[in-house]
Every structure is written in structure tokens, then in C-alpha cells.
Image (cartoon, rainbow, N blue to C red):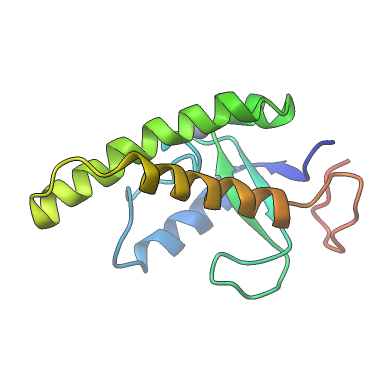
Length: 138
Ligand SMILES: [Zn+2]
């Protein structure tokens, strides 16, 4: 099974930058991979549901070449490890900055990773399905 995606072109990246500029909290002013946080994502995956919970089809998860490869090969264990490493780094730094708490528990990290991946499995659109838009992958 493969998931519906499209290449991120200059126009799509510009739209993401505009969206990022309106957010109070962001990981980076530049678009980064939604999985691992790497710069220069190359594709975006379709979703049946928006990040805010509204059921509306959209282009939702942007991915770097390495994460895209893991998704295409359904190498979920590798992707899970990669996302876990990113979350540990991100949440660790965030807590350190806000509360001076240092490390965050592995359980909480694992829960966050599971929620992220489960959302993709549940709302990602299989490439064989027609999302009804004009940007369907061929
Ligand atoms: Zn990535």
C-alpha cells in the first residue's frame, strides 16, 4: 500500500511559509519534515482530516527524502525510531527552556510518537483512492 502524495514545488513551499508565519508556536520559520524535523522536505502526503481535527481532505504531512523512503517501503520501525529521536530532542529542549525539568519520560515520548503515526495510518489516503481533488498522484 502506498500513500497519496505530491512533490513540494516552490508554490507549495511558499504557501507553507505563509501558514507558518501566522503561527505563534513553530519549530522553524522554514518548512521542515513533519516526521524527523529535517530541513528541505520534498513531498507532502494527503489526509482525510486536517491537523485541527476537521474532516476535510488536505495536504498535511510534509516529508524529507529519508522519511519518504521509509513510508514508501513501509519501514515503520525505522520511521518510529527516527521520529522518537526527533521528539526526544525537541521535547527535551522545550521542557528545559520552559520549566528547567530536563529529560522527559520515555513513556510520554512513545505515546506522542504513537499518536503521530496512528494519525497517519488512520487519515493518510491510499494512493489508489481518489481524493476528489485535482492534485491526485498518478
Ligand atoms: Zn524526515
